[in-house]
Length: 228
Ligand code: SF4
Image (cartoon, rainbow, N blue to C red; front, side, top):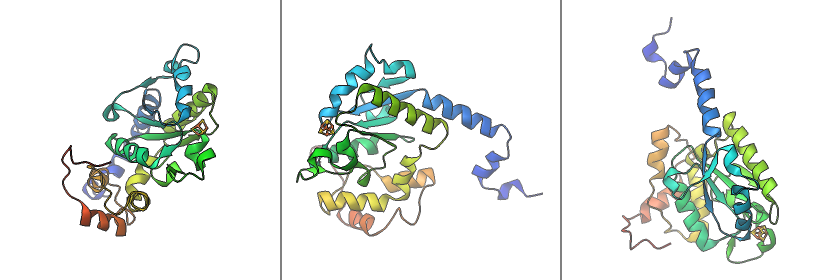
């Protein structure tokens, strides 16, 4: 019989037959209680009030609006994202505690939509942060938003909504895309490498040429100095 000490903690927990039952129960509870931070950029934002108010009533599904990234689970990006706005969106995303999910609403988040030729917009949200669900349309009706949120809930319940892990595992790639758009001195106050270590999600793609560039330019940010 294997010495328990030699089995990694994660696998040791799996030897308990009730572990899966508990995990599934936790995933179910998580999927039925989502606090949503709606980053109302772009015109798609006008379809959110009907989703949350009496006609379509998103709260019956356990989805509530939240005002701070620290307490939110889902980041909704509701339309085209300008280069300036994208910096705020990334900063907001990084402030959210894991597990966290991103929903891209509107065709503009999928491929740039009707602004695909604009010099000022970021074309594809998933180039800069991992996206769990896209809800396409210009703009999508509230039924489509509700349907997309139900798909997200099902992904969370079945343990398939793990894109937040991708941000840690492939941080060098995402940071590289951000640096291409914002310049080599781009930085946020969040220590993503430290968080990746905390969750045990460091891979060979977490660090690389772009994180080295970040370390080169990184300096302590004072609140009033932070230029976004
Ligand atoms: S997809 Fe259409 S409605 Fe949505 S942000 Fe773009 S232009 Fe506006």
